[in-house]
Image (cartoon, rainbow, N blue to C red; front, side, top):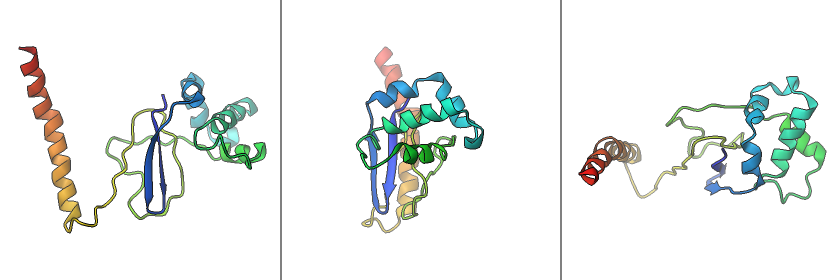
Length: 147
């Protein structure tokens, strides 16, 4: 199920929650199979499904200057990329070459804070704190709530 779409343009970043017709299209069990198939090997009907998904996406549905041929060209480049938890899709400052539709899971956008001199160290401390909260603190709270 589509939960969010992450976009990064130059130094601007956004995470957008999408609730549209695209959500119901993404539930289609065949969509993952279609996307897994290399574009050159896709059947015409599968390409039409992808074109429909793109046309109805919150990102592209208001782009009146895009023709069916433009959508077909976009569909010809749609491929599946599976990412592991915590895997970086794009580093801060890196020029984007792709945009992503998140089929399952979630994405967060983390931007370097210019006010923190030791950013990598601070980010590591923060990550370990989040892990501790999830693995230790939340479990303790759950146990206490049950008693």
